[in-house]
Length: 368
Image (cartoon, rainbow, N blue to C red; front, side, top):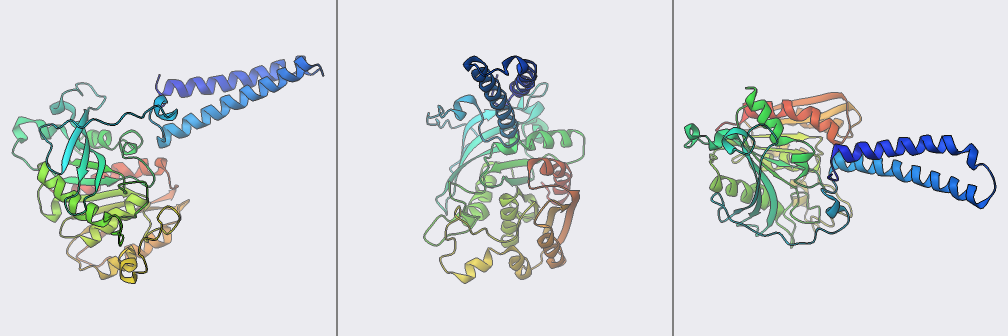
């Protein structure tokens, strides 16, 4: 039974309930002052609390995917990954593994599509970062063998893992289901973290440091276009992200409208973070700091027909005021849409409510 399985979580909850009931039942019998009674009371209380903490921890891990397996939790996953090149690999994108959706016929790519685990290297930035690529079933079907597909880069928040976009937010399954239902066009999804390493670089070209804006704004789309059947016009590619990923998605699209035709920022913020996880991003460069301010960037942007979608909640999210400012700053022929929930939070549950309508929206904004 895996660390993230429903069975393990259910057993942990059941153990907590049974131990609580046992504590209530046996407490009168253990009310004496003998050492056996004292040890019994301590043992029952300790066991009950451990079971409760285990259940809470398993539930949190299942939601946010801090650890993917028991070996990962106990630090036993130490083996170095093996790079295996496949036919879809290019100089920039190396395919290291393949996965399929858990649906009938899922093992056949032409039926249920395919998820590729990849390593992507930027030719200009010299940054290498892992990620996943979802290819829809139509990509493998003979009648579509010469057809291009729209593609969207999808970034998780910091310090999340790219795997969260598959297991936690279900992007491939949602795209598969919506496409099968005829609500959106088949779309390639390139799913990654918004930072290539441990440092939160906020998709900024740091003076003397990682050139992450170059990677996410230039190298990444070029790698996608050179490896998969994706066109090279702005209307062929979109950008999606939540939290830090949402900030990066909106910023990259504002800075590179010649590459990206649409962006969706779920619970995005609008100015680069400045805290111990980022370090000094700008090294005193005022122009670079202003470039990283999304509200300033959208003011300076030349409108060319780019589409933006922003999300927030009337209660529970801190970005509502800046989201409304962003909406007012978008100038035609650029377009802006929004999803404003009555209540929500900066969490997976909120984003799961926004992803299906967002994917349908994105499908209507970018083309093959």
